[in-house]
Amino acid sequence: MADVTESKIKTSMAIRSASESGSDLMRKAMNTSNMPTTLRPCHIAKNTQALKPTLLHLIVGLMIAVFASYLTVIFFGVNSESTFMLVFFNLLFVSLTFSLNGGLIEKSLLLILGNIVGFLWNYILRSITFIVADWGDSFNTVYLILKPFANLVWIVSFWSISLAALSSSSKNSKQEASSC
Amino acid sequence: MLVETLELFFMILTGMILAYLVRHYVFTLTVIKNAHRQKGVDTSGGVCYQPTVSVLIPARNEGNVIGTILHRMTELTYPKDKLQVIVIDDGSRDDTGKVAEQHAKAFNYIDVLKRDQNHGGQGKSAALNAGVKLAKNDIILCFDADYYPQRDIIDKLVAKFSDPKVGAVQARITVLNEPINMVTRLVALERTGGYRVDQQAREELGLIPQFGGTAGAVRRSLLEQLGGWDESILAEDTDLTFRVCLAGYKVRYVNDAECYEEAVESWRAYWKQRHRWAAGHMQCFFKHWLRVLRSNNLGFKEKIDGLLLLGVYFMPVLALLSWIVGISLFFLKPLDWFRMLWALMPVSFYSCVGNFAPFFEVGIGVYLDGRTRAQWLVPLLVFTFLYNIPICSKAFADLISSKLLGARLDSWNKTAHSGNGNSYIMN
Image 1 (cartoon, each protein chain N blue to C red):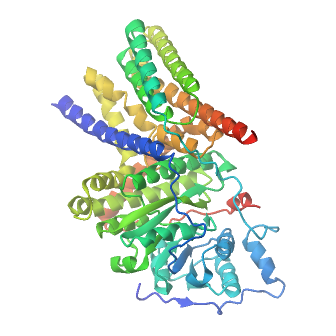
Image 2 (cartoon, rainbow over the protein chains, first blue to last red; image 1 turned 180 degrees about the horizontal axis):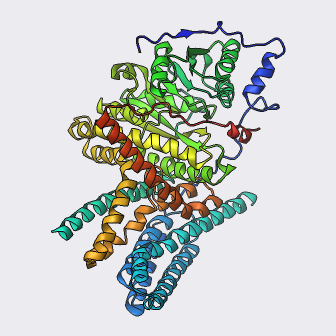
Image 3 (cartoon, each protein chain N blue to C red; image 1 turned 90 degrees about the horizontal axis):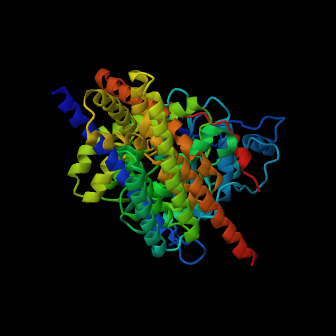
């Protein structure tokens, strides 16, 4: 860097042409002709969620998760990948979303609904397995390889829908509280 | 023999993926646990630590955006007698220099450092090093030209420097032009997971928050002691993060201090930006991993987190490798344990975006920001992962070939900024 010649040029460049005033140039630089003097971002979320500790919610959620997993695995006989995914979903859902704001009933219903969706998804996949069994080995193999992905799709989708629902209801309760 | 080797390899790979998953699960839990406590720096009156600050804005062909950030510099709440703003016009061919000069004439705390076409364009690190020579103040704060900080961002950031062990402080980056298209929306999700959860958790757990190179401040005395920015590294920010920590100082993160950026708007621009980040991060891995392990200034958990942070851009490559090895094993010898690990693969595929932000981490970050509609886009993050595989693989190949051939990686392969983000700035 020693050979780099640098000079501080506050005065070396004539930046105002005869036809362009300083304020025009400034506006041009701001990339808009009517930029307000005071700037403020308008769409950045300022309503950061403050959470309340919810130990009771966690305990209830854990009980529901254990019960739902037990029912699904013992009575409906899902396979190992699906069991793994269900347990994974229950663990994530209970430990993370049950600590968020929102009613216990709402969260519990979402958890139960998640397990039902997971079970139905598994049922659909098993039906497909049954159908594609006759379609030849190569198709069957591709299906088996992709199966874990198919298993996860419902978790991610349900996860995003659930958080959207919880976030929405949390906002609604805030608005109701503030209007009261 | 082949099967056993593949099995071992597959177990190691999935073990590494699992380590990242556990790390980010702990991060997410930590942030949720602490979310009820409103942490932050109180800058509303009272006694504040207000050292003198020099703001560096390196700019190369940033005519579309430079005016906006310079105007913002005039609106900062920080006392102007303690502020110096240095625009480094790094050999621009557009009107960047003219706009900067215009502001410098109007405001006495704004200076312009002109680097001509012959000497400019050697990379952001070179531009920053040139700027530091002009800096007169105790704290060096960097902004990219497309950034748009909160008015009181400096107050919030420098408050952390009241602790003499703090060497660098990072602000939160939020995407300004998010509504433009799907790319900007997905980048915004990555940023949310990366900053609102990942950086915040590392701050709360006393690990190593990453100094992002922009919207971040560093002690000038420390920077000079470290010899400035390393111009041979593409990710000069990550490099500085580790040099600060290895020197025995802390890097801190302030979530309340927000700075808005103009995100890339096309997949092509995304490729260029992420390729630079990935290659730079990988350079840092090879430069620092052994130093991190041997350091006496880092605790055990900092070392583990530091290594995971350094290796984060290898994950898409490793996930691809484990996918290939897994398929091979599937045909050769599918065992029970294999099926369990195999089920982990798709989770990792939904995780390798941004700073290895899994879908649950991004979702929680978006929730904590109080946003609802953005949640619906979380499943689409799989596309950014799929895109990150060739990006990181190419970056790795380029890095290896540059090492073998002794060539230097492109340094100012910079992102072009359209200025579209300006339309989201209004009263």
